[in-house]
Picture 1: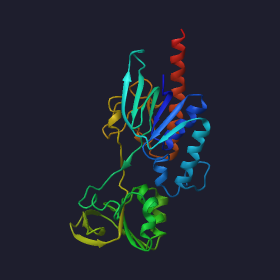
Picture 2: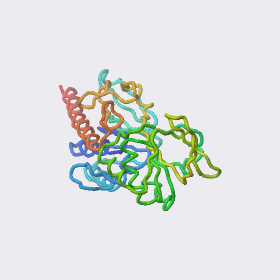
Picture 3: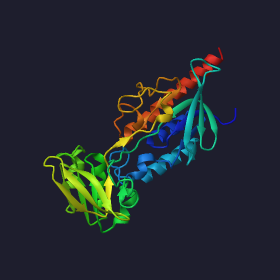
Picture 4: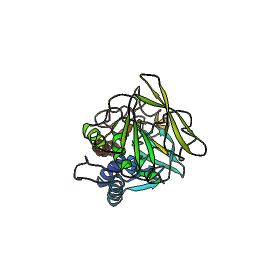
Length: 318
C-alpha cells in the first residue's frame, strides 16, 4: 500500500518528537506531521532550566536536537503539512481499524495514530486584540520581544508562562507592567522570586484588560481593577498575553473521548478508546503540562504502539 506507515504522529512538539525517536528505534516505519515547524511550544520558550541533562538550554536549541535525534533514528518529518481529516477503516479487522490520515498534501495509512497536537495560546477576547495582533499584541516573547527594545510593554498573566517570559522581556525593553487579575501569582516560587527582583518590572494586580486602544498600532490599554471597579489607561507599545492554553482537537473527536475541559482521555499507557490511537503531551487529560512529562508520554506511547503492532502481526500469523 502506497504511503503506509506503522506509526503516524500528529504534532512535532516534545511529545511527538520523543514518540518518533522511540518508535523509529524500535524499528517502526514512522512519519510525523506538523502544520508549522518541529518543536511546538519549545520554539516559543527562551530558557529551560528543569529538563534533565541540561543546566540551561534554549527551547529552539532543544527542539533542534530532538528533531535531529528523530531523523537519525529514521523518522520522516513532514513540516508545513496539516492533517485535515482522519478516517477509520474496519474492513480488514473489526476491532483494530486502519487509520486513514488526509493532509493538505496527500493521504497516508497506518495501524497506529499518536495524537501529539499540543495546545494554542488562549486569547483575552477583548476589543482590539485581533485588530492589533502583530501590531503590538503578541503571544510569544521570544518571537517578538526584539521589536520592543527600549520600549514599555505589558505582560498579562500570573502563571508559569507569564513569569517565565517576563525576565526575558525585562532584559530587552525599558519597562514591563505585569498585569494579573488576582492578588497572588500561580507560578512556581522561584519564578516569582526572579520577577520580583527585577527593577524594571511593575506589578499591577487585581486588574484585567478591558480594551486595547490605538490607531494603526497598539498605543494603550484600558484596565479595570476587579476589586474597586476603577478604570485607568496604561500607555504601552506592546502587550504579551500568557493566560493559558486551549486544545484544537476537532478532527480527533470521533476517535477519542474528551474530558470536560476539552482534553483527550487516555489510560496510563496513553491509549484512547479506539484501538491503535494514542494521545500524548499537553493535549492529554491529566497532563502536568511539563516538558519532561510530555517526553515521557511520547516514549510510553511508542513502546505501547510497538507492542500493539506486534500483537497484530502475531494474530495475523496464527
